[in-house]
Length: 578
Image 1 (spheres, rainbow, N blue to C red):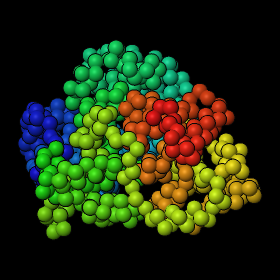
Image 2: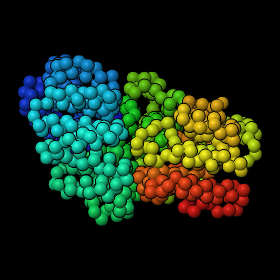
Image 3: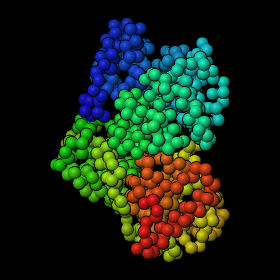
Image 4: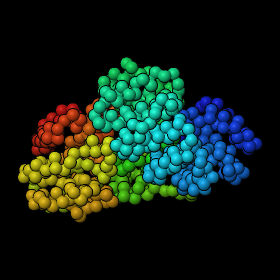
């Protein structure tokens, strides 16, 4: 696979040299020496992108065929498949190799790490339990306990994680494992609102002179910003050193720089999210190179989708910039977004996302470049001044919008999105309960519209028990699958009030007046330290942290009233903070 078909590669060659030695020794069955060189090529337990690509170029399949029972080759293959997001190959590897290495802690831990992080958390935790059952020494046992507790934290099972950390003896584990434990314990404390205690847990590890603590420094810097303000992070942490280090997860590094308002560094590291084990979208493979800012006049570029619907809609605000640069644009998105995006970007060829590997597919032969949609910010949104104000980038069915309006009662239509379909302990902090909003929703001076794309049974029962809510639930439009109709429903509203969900992202794309709330706006990476969402027309963010729901709702209603007054009086100013 040519390097140009993936994310830009790092320039240092030492990693390639070490892996080349490891693979050569592996072919000679000198496993001990091979593992030593592989360790040098795999800092922090994860091989970097250029190393993995080199392994692929050296025909890893042939290595596996020649040495099917090799521990080294099994571990190398697992890292390759994880990096490439090749789920089927990884699950096949687990199925074939697990019986051979069921008593090997390294293999069990790596397989469990994949299953917990990428695939089936329950299966991963079961495998970690198996590893603990075969552990024979105290250090290994405690290492596995910490690993299992950390994955429980990632799965938002905080109480189970607490119980495991209570029995873990951190004095016998490695420094890296201690850092892992500290980071996870800090997350539990932060979720409980104990931000200062979380910071105290992290800080002892920050100044340890080891490159393996790069991720710890990122975690600690982020927590420091939440406690003391992100404008003060540079007083305690060397951000230039964090930026220069090739260690640390690129997604976390990018989010840190976004939170301190450093867009240039943030987008640079966000470019390498494709190399993160936590990147949750399939990778794509093309013959055309990834666009890296070259001139686009007269060139054909394919923009491929990644992450969730809300992210796609947000990043789609930059599609028009590609057109302005002279490019011929092909846009590939999930099926449920095709109609909405085809209406919105009529200058582009919009189609359903193709297969992961299209290097030999004729429909992709004439491309000059490809780019994942989240990478456009590196070239078009490098400064706050580059974010447009009051701009609409989505279009919808205006006839349907008018019909929906006419079916109403003539009062101001207010859309409510109090939560999303994705619920966990962290996300729930940024949501309100329907019950908190009922008094407002039942206010006879407005016409409420439900913009929760998934309403749970409890909320449905509550709505059904309130006759005053009438047509609050629009059963005509499937807000999960029919995003074209959903956009019209949103556009029929005068204002939208909600958490950061895919529907509020669509509202931002339609330039609807928005009132957004979340737990702590400082956590919002794409607020870029502004207290607003620049992508959504600089909409101010209302904090839930340390406030009673009735206080928050009163604040939201006040802001909504200002927006409604502004709609009735075109000469009125914008809400403070815009």
